[in-house]
Length: 177
Image 1 (cartoon, one colour):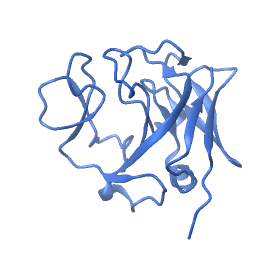
Image 2 (cartoon, rainbow, N blue to C red):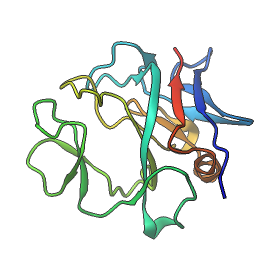
Image 3 (cartoon, helix red, strand yellow):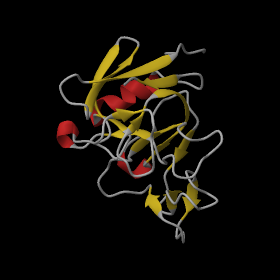
Image 4 (cartoon, rainbow, N blue to C red):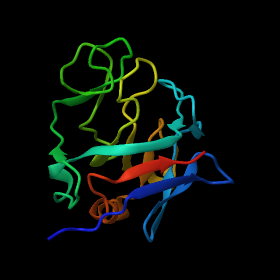
């Protein structure tokens, strides 16, 4: 059975607080958290900004021990305790999934704070990957109160699965400034 997925997810910055916004996927409208510096065109590693632009959604990850396998049209991979993500701009595997332990600076994908229980990989800085332009830009779970992220887009745990069911391999995300 062929599913109809939304073609584009749009993320709009709040006019009141640049660290918050709303995510629109078809008729689904969700509050979201943005980077602590708000949306920015000139994204750099560590600046806390969410990159402005339109990007593919590459794949999704999930913690099998923290909930059922999400239904989605994206390629889906279970997060393992030994998964990391390189955030070292000089590393040859910068902005990529890496096995732990890993010598270069990295982020752990297997987190205790539940933010990465469900993660969608946004294709920021991927073609080609440029050191220092920013890494690990994801759509993931929000902290309580939608506090700012380090540059990602974050949505509520109760609604991420509804969103995942609406996205497929041709869905893009557009972060508006």
